[in-house]
Image 1 (spheres, helix red, strand yellow):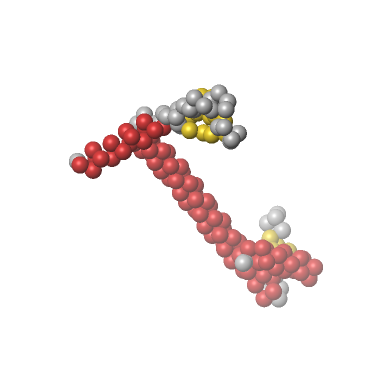
Image 2 (tube, one colour):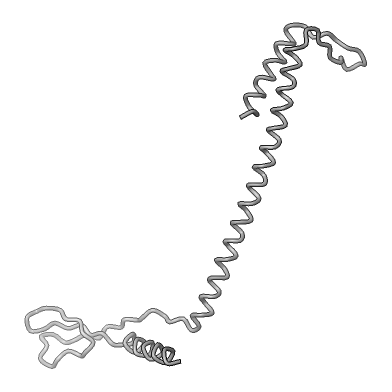
Length: 150
């Protein structure tokens, strides 16, 4: 309690000095003086009263600080949520790429290991894969492996 009273007294004294008036005047040697007292009667030039405004003092600084903390917390939570969503999307992409890699490796194995390969022709029949088609399929599989198997 005693510390609270002491802190309140210091704040009160600081606020009184914040509203002090500033004067500008030129002394007898021609030097410009800035003081919180009016210029003496023997000043070389007439003094000028400066209207300097102090920074506004927040009415309820604790509430303002709490509000700022709440806003910062909301922003932090939004950033964290966005980061989690991006990580989830990245993991899904990695899982998809892994599956494509496995499929491409299987296709490559089929086209390289099978000496006489047949594929459906689309009308219910089968067609034997010639060497040109086999090489095209092997090249496609190698491209897919290069793209998805990292």
